[in-house]
Length: 242
Image (cartoon, rainbow, N blue to C red; front, side, top):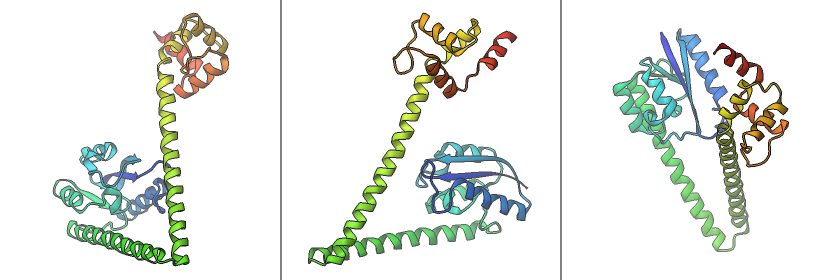
């Protein structure tokens, strides 16, 4: 049976408790080998929360549009919402690598139990925190230390998350700035620039600033071309064909 594989992680570079992209691929590979599935395409959403409906995620929507059964490593990679799972079952076929022989009824029951367990865990956590805060308010030093440790851990997690988002934003901004001069660099090469120095001189002559607004140098040209995936020989070959 031909299938398409779908992988999802909520944050970029995330290990996701052992469910990073590589781990998910291994789950699917093993299940496919055991069940005789042939994975013809793979799709992945990175930085996408499981609370978003699968058909509203870019890669997931493409996977289901193929019309073949969609395979995920574990059910929560498809969704953490019972309503999402139930709705998908009515319109699409999908399989779960860790439960390859489960039918739709079994998957539905599993989704309900998983959501119920998450609710219980959340309620227990809130109750424990409330008890801890009450003890801390009465001067319990152990409780005070635990709250302090928890606050520090949460703060560190927020800092790491914000740092990751910041790096992603900076990377995207750099890509966008580089794209603005892509055509100009290609034209310089087509017009005969055969070195990084020649490209830098050409851009200066055309009065085109660097992505950051400075003056072009061979190094600046090299960095922008690397970001754009441009190479002197490849661009020249394309221009010669025309």
